[in-house]
Length: 83
Image (cartoon, rainbow, N blue to C red):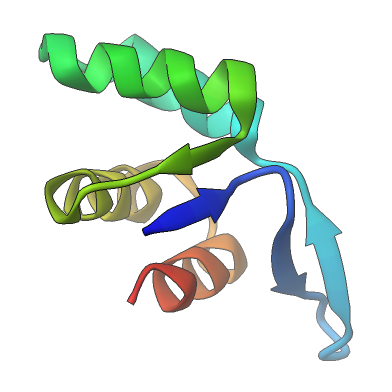
């Protein structure tokens, strides 16, 4: 699955679609919390490139980080996009 974390479409409080670049924030969140070398490389890739090709294992990893490190409206957009 190819995802571009520079172009996440979130909804504002009025339901309008707003583009959101979360590549740097997500990359940093994973980088600062992981003890896994594979996740460390994923964090670097997301941070540097924004657009990444993800395995199903990486998708599940990102869902876990998003659920704990981001607010609800970002979770809503990202998790829906990853499913």
